[in-house]
Length: 128
Image (tube, rainbow, N blue to C red; front, side, top):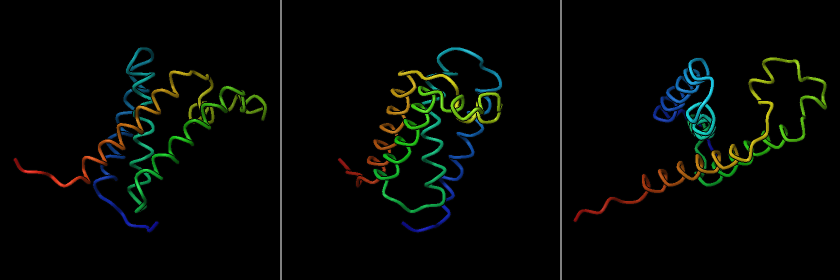
């Protein structure tokens, strides 16, 4: 793994971050807010790390997915409450407060999407 700024992934990171902020500010319920927002969140994290690290796509995808799952399971076990931090607004925003199996599915689909795109991007184009 080496460090190198990748302008494409950095641009995508900023685009996904702006999208997530707009979703959080303007959409309080519904499909776009929840499952789609979770789907995008892992893509955002993936792109953020790929902006600075030259790392295998599968390893990074697995790491991001594992991180997202750990955060979700921390919600299941009420980690913030166990640490007496449930009233800390920023931590609630970052870590969330409610466990949903749907979120795990959205994270998985997000990483699968990234890995498919990375695979198609790396595959030599065939001319017919």
